[in-house]
Length: 507
View 1: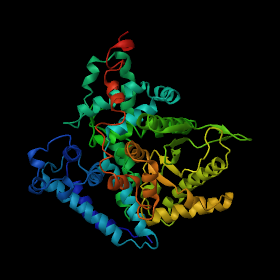
View 2: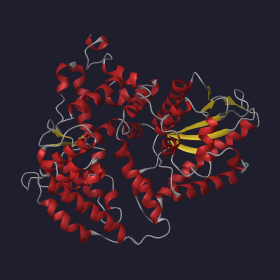
View 3: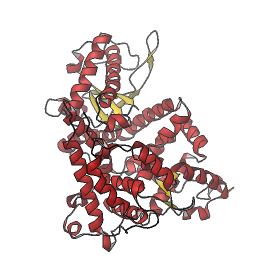
View 4: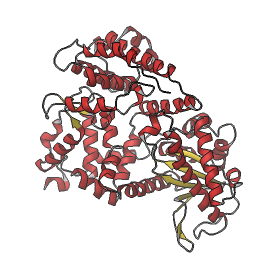
């Protein structure tokens, strides 16, 4: 049974109601950029505790708590009057209360069974992406995915911007907002006028008025164990109008960057059922491109092929060195919001894991054909074979609940399709995100596939996520001097466009 925390929440809400919204959101901006290493804090926001520690989290400053504070300020803060929230002591008092409310919501929750393990999973979904931030690898990955011809056409049709222009815009806005939360778009002064309508349309897509944001936030607000985990409308609309449409505040620039990369997926699937296929194809192409760039001189890489009658498609990619083969399947599937965050009797996370389990079963179905000699482009020669399911979204594949629940669905799928269960031991599978896959490619530059994968699938590390495992076993090999596609992203800055006024953009 879920119990209400509204009585505990009221004192916090009343304090927020006495606070000035805009100064509060500007303080959220400053702390968010400080955590990301983008700016120094104003003197009033620096506290003695922050000065005494090496990392902000050691002083109790967490980005996910700042996101919650922004949500509550939008919901209840004073837009014209109220106490100015411009000093560190006051901000940290609110953050401490948020932490207390979260703990109390969990304490009074009457959860049973898997509730503790689900809590671990949703904490991971909520917190880990903040800790990773938006890296150059992330931006380069989306740039190359978006640049595949069919997806590029869909994006230009949706936004009125080429993929190059979209990423120039991301880089320009990120640079402009390093020190101030107001979106000025000063770079448009030298842009061609023809691009301005597309920018106006994009701003309208990403921004809402305060009244609209309050209504959206109130609509999803909960006062139970899920209070801290409900969807924050700032993730879809990271810009807020400050009185007029030309005055836009971005409380958390990180959310704006996420919206213009990962969020594009949702823009397109709302318009077309074909968008999922376009993204899936682009993701598969990126995985192969990354493998070839990192390992093309030391491994044989096979792309997917048609085989059999009736026709079937093989595994997406096979990466083979002298020691073993990786059977790489690329999956766009991601856990939806409820699966990531909501604790309820219906267990939405378990339902999401069933979809992932179905993907694992499909990999073993095609692996069965391959080992039987049905593939035309690859034949087994006895070397170990390791299935690897690479996901675009991070599933945080760790912990007893994740492993047990996923395996239950895999076992059911094996029985349903009559697949040889001994394959699970002979060829154990691994789930990893594309970020972890790029780290694995870095290790495989100097370490054999069988050494990496035998260690990961062995009993000691089977329940570990791939990233922590690689960092633990191969710390030196995971280091790269630059992002895998760093140069490709750098080339975006000077590419011809209506922003740069060179090449075709100057005609």
